[in-house]
Length: 118
Image 1: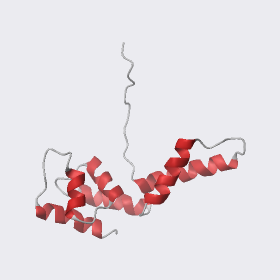
Image 2: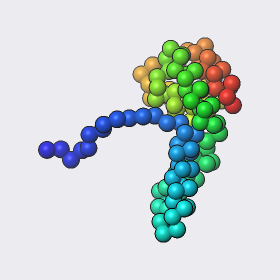
Image 3: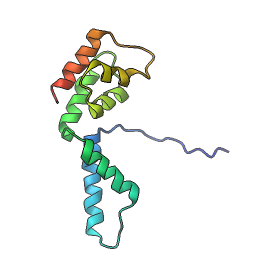
């Protein structure tokens, strides 16, 4: 017998897509006067409002373009779309946990894709 819950499914979202979903939740909660917004929800809404720079459509397009690059996996593409790194050092920080490192040319390829959306 384990006390851990089984992970059934996992979907990645960009922060812009999360902002859109949380806006729906916020509107639903605002419509019901008796229902209070929990602290965690309020903080999540504040966070996405502050850091979501792209529209959900733009962020999804950015992720799709990043996935076309050879060394960018799905989780990393979403992380890059959320952080929008502007130079090699910021991008290296994203890839720091990976078992491989990118060459200067590969880093520039990723940064060129990001620059189209910033």
